[in-house]
Amino acid sequence: MTAQEHRLEAPHRRRKAGPRALERAAVAGYKATSWLLGVLPPGPARAVIGRLSQGSYLAWPARRRSSNENFAHVLGLPPDDPRVRKLALRAYREYGRYLVELMRLPSMPPETVGVLATEIDAVEIKRIASEAPGGLILAAGHVGNNEAVAAGVAHHGLPISVVADDSSFPELYDLLRRQRESWGVKVIAWRNLREIFGVLKRREMLALLVDWGYRHDGIPVQLFGAWTTLPAGPATLAAKTGSWILPIAIRRTPEGGFQVTWSAPIEVPPGDPAALQRATQAMADALASTISTAPEQWYSFKPMWPDTAAAATDLERRAQVMLAGRPDPGPGRGLPPDEADAAVEGTVA
Image 1: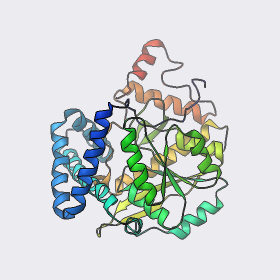
Image 2: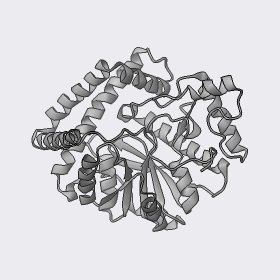
Image 3: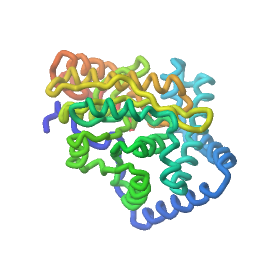
Image 4: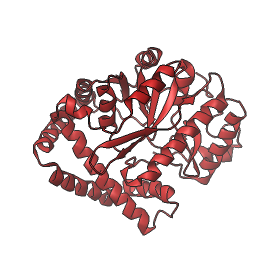
């Protein structure tokens, strides 16, 4: 694997597996909380968890700073503008609502979970999937409720798989895997490349989240008019398997269900760095459109943009290299030492 090649890997920063006792405590805590929220009335539960979520924003300076910077990009305002803080608090409240929904799902019958995504054109999705030469990669962001939508897709008889991290809390991962498979959603560990490729070679659907936070080794794109990166996985997989990418937009409806729409399918010819950049930019544009429609429903609170101007400038340079048909040189490569160091130092944790 050369420095110019994008690797297929978990798009978020992974932690090492915790001690066994911590793992068991996490599983026990998840089960207890899920049971409690399953028996409590949903309205009060959403209010309480929403307030606790907002409290975490207020009490956690690093997370508050990252969230404000993210929503400042969305609104086109300075991070310290009161309107940014107001939107961030709304988003954390909505995140609390999502957590309640997520915890209540295990107590629901599979057929009930399957109809949460009430507004989804399954016939059209089947048509697009049938026309794709390979599989169909559903590229989504942390908006609305991806678990409910995946269950809705499976409810319509469409084979769908999702990629998840099994390295931090393996026992909790196994619990969540079993729950999702009871809804008809197959969960694949991020390191199982054989199965990931197998899903697409069988012309099935693979769901991938693309807004895990900025990483300097992703594919450079513009998001809300500023340079950042999105994971290389979707475009790379599409190019290698002949699959199409379908950017998915999920929005919560006033009735509590979820509306699912999508942009035009993206084709990625193999062996073309420009095609990788253009496809990933198309996903960034679709993500921006989804977020703009309901920014309070976006709950990706990790830093989404680099924290230095030098890193942003380097991303623009790398994008131009790819659009010229040459492989991505990687962060800082080809720059003078001082500029290269400044570009790499723009990486955020």
